[in-house]
Image 1 (cartoon, rainbow, N blue to C red):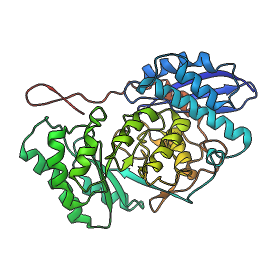
Image 2: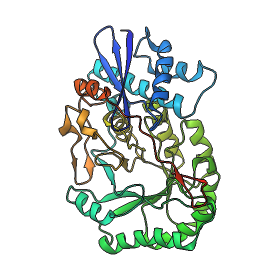
Image 3: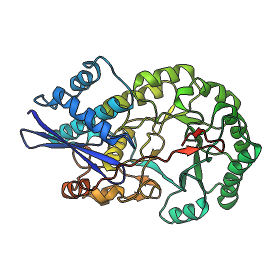
Image 4: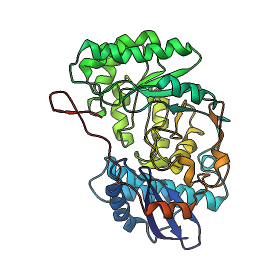
Length: 382
């Protein structure tokens, strides 16, 4: 068998699908994208295609190493996302050829079902109690929300009080019937992270995500010594080499690589193993589409330290399409009592509605995150 063609489809709301074809008619799907930079990743995918077209799709490890090492310059969000989508599609092909789900090829199940959580609220947190009540009717009991609006490097006590008040209202409304993580989203600098974490401790959040930006990762260990709240990070780290430094320094309790950003299944399977060796939980980042979620689940179901799975059904970023819009086997993605079952079909287990993908790609928006500014006019972290 040989790879014959790579085709990319940018689709709403902010996703991109990759179709890899072979000369024996077996097709694999991947999801290579950086939110807001889909065209750039698309160009990188097609540049990498010269390394994979004509090659045996079964040699995933070799193809991965060629894509990573042959270009001399390596790593970073664009190249690793391009590799990730190709890698996902290769695993999809391998599973279909062998008639097995990808998790079986990785050693088989370590659990029967996987805990998932749901986003609530938008970029500027509000009305989260209403959203939680609605989602609880669907069986969710674990949530994540943005913790703050824009914050200056050193900001006012009023901003801290406002952020904490939202969390206090949630605990008052639901008590310990729910669990929730708080995403600082890299909006909080180290001088503000300390007082915020201290003020949030009485409300016992499940975790605080990206307490500071990944480029300030040296702060994780210092902040962990300061708070009892588990710290989570990883969506803006792109290889096991990025994670190696964080594991060595300590401070992170939950690691969150993105299967569409951090080199795909091949790389994130290794990152999960590294995390287990450091007694760190694994909870992949996934605000993306169905192929990305299927790839995450493939690794979740073979990783003993996998604890939570993000998913984008109903997420506030989805404008113009939803996760299951491009899926034929929708029932396989059913969430019951906050859990999802293994996807049982061969490969990644997702049947893509190619006709719907092609049609949606004809009017795909160029999504961009908003640009925020502080009161003094300087750019704020979104």
